[in-house]
Length: 174
Image 1 (cartoon, rainbow, N blue to C red):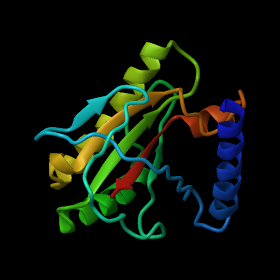
Image 2 (cartoon, rainbow, N blue to C red):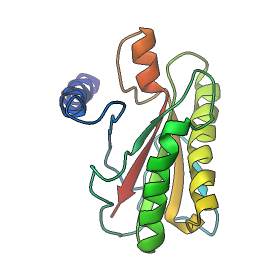
Image 3 (cartoon, helix red, strand yellow):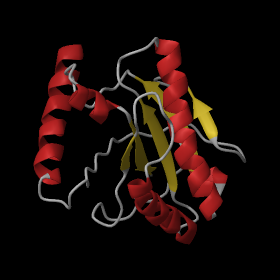
Image 4 (cartoon, rainbow, N blue to C red):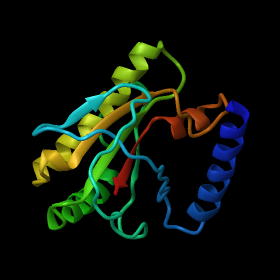
C-alpha cells in the first residue's frame, strides 16, 4: 500500500512540476484533496491523519487566480512577502463566499522528531490562518491540520527536496 501511495505521489509531483514550468516564476501550486472535521468558532487544529467531514462548500477559486502552496524557510513559520498577495487573494475569495471552507495543511521536511515537526507544521498553518483572519476571513471557514513530515512533497534528501517539503497547502473542501 505504501509503494502504491508513493508511486501516486510521484506521478502527481511530475504533473505538478510539468504544470508549474508553464506558470509564472515562483508559482508552484500544489493541491491535495481531502475532507476533515467540522469546526467551532475558532481556527481548528488537529494532528496527523485525522479525517472526517468539514462542510459542503463548492471548490475554491480557479487555480490560476490564487496560489495555494506557500513555502517556508528552515525551522521558520514566517510567511514570505511574495506569498502574501496570493494568501490575500484566497482570503478575498473566502470573504465573498461565506459557505466556502479551507483546510490549511502544515508540512515540514523530515529533519527533527515527529512531535517537533507536527508542532512546526501547525505553527506554519496557523500563521497563514492568522493572516487570513486579519484580512477578515471568518475563523469558521478555516481548519488547520499538521502532517509534519508525514506527507513529503519530494522523496529525496537534498536541500531542494527539503525546500519543497516545508510548506502550507491550502485546500478548498466541499
